[in-house]
Image 1 (cartoon, rainbow, N blue to C red):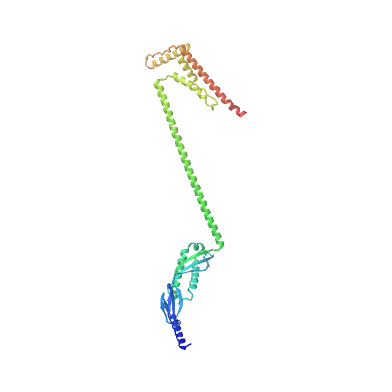
Image 2 (cartoon, helix red, strand yellow):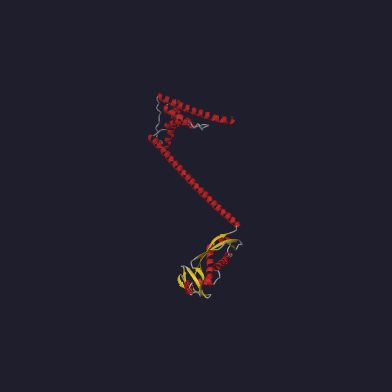
Amino acid sequence: MDPLVILLLVAALVVVFLVASTVRIVPQARRYNIERFGRYRRTLQPGLNFVVPVADRVNTRLDVREQVYSSDPRPVITEDNLVVNIDTVLYYQITDPRAAAYEVADYLQAIDQLTVTTLRNVIGSMDLEETLTSREEINSRLRAVLDDATGKWGIRVNRVEIKAIDPPSTIKEAMEKQMRAERDKRAAILHAEGERQAKILTAEGTKQKDILEAQGAQQAMILRADGEAKAVELVFQAVHRNNADPKVLAYKYLETLPHLASSDNNTFWVIPGELTEAVRTVTRAFGEQPADEAARSAQREEQTEAEGAADDGGTPALEARHAPMPAETAAAADEAVKQAAAAVNDAKAEAQAAESPRRAAPGG
């Protein structure tokens, strides 16, 4: 082969190599750190960039987007000497590519170790229950410490989140028992409160029922008493309006006597002392009085009138004479007396018949 052709090929290869070494295309959200003869020169921005061939080289390629770093579970001791495993999630972003490449050897390892030490300092001042309920406080304190320490590394910590807090199995069992007991307690309280409310409502209902029944009975008694009073008043007015004499009242009294023993609960029957007087009054009303009785009555009336005349200053009193009554009237009076006596005997017999089984029952 001609040496000239070989020389031209070598020159072309060198030119291609130099052009390739001169041009650098940086993707979006990437940063390239350029060193010239081993010393930091500049940081290439996204797009087309030119460097000095052979003298400049790319040292580090960094991604400036927000990154997520999840650490492994780390044991941490609480203030009450309990070991818990805590997982953390870290959100960070590179703000200075030069510092991230030259201020720290491995920024991920540095962030991980700093997170663990800070977490142990924070959790070491809290007990287990406070640790489980204070995640926001732990996150804020971790973020403040990490953001301050990583600022000189060209890294900004946006968020720190605790992913999981795992206490020992024995503590989990104790916590489950406590939660179960708490739930049982709340259930018992709610049940007791429900029973209390039910009893209160039942008592209120019973009270209202008794009050309404008493008011109803009161109103019924008042209305019944008003009715009886009006009935008595009407009877009283009728008697006075018709000017009923004692004879009619005595006859009605005799008519009422048989009803005294009509009840099934009567074991004995009392004969009023006014019975003979009532019979005598009816007899005088429907029949003639015997001669001796008439004489005695006339004598008593004359004596009474004389005493009245003496008391009134000698004013003569009128004598009341009983006119003889017909034979039919006397027969009617005798019949009324016989009926009254028969009614009294029937009432006595019914009372004795009702009393006999009761007396025989204890002895039998």
